[in-house]
Image (tube, rainbow, N blue to C red; front, side, top):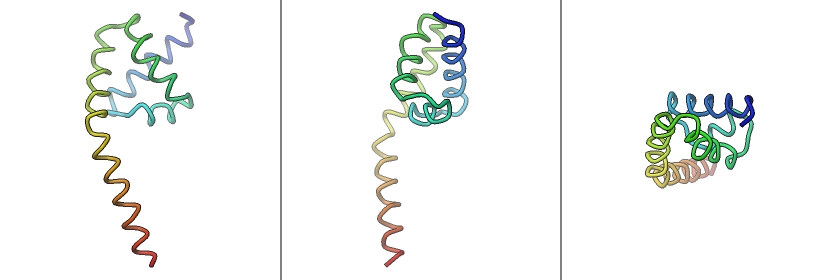
Length: 86
């Protein structure tokens, strides 16, 4: 694995753990695709640091479990703002 990829993988892992970030937010922050983030933290990180990969997996599992709630809140906000405009 090239050095810059390894550095990115570790930086993504640290960012996700420290901020409880989603894959989408991490992708935006590091200016890479969601697919790249996902591959970095699930496959490449496992090769570099299995213990760090486990921590990231825990954060992503929590985010996955809560995503339907965040989606519902976003929809609620959207319609709340539309109602205020009328």
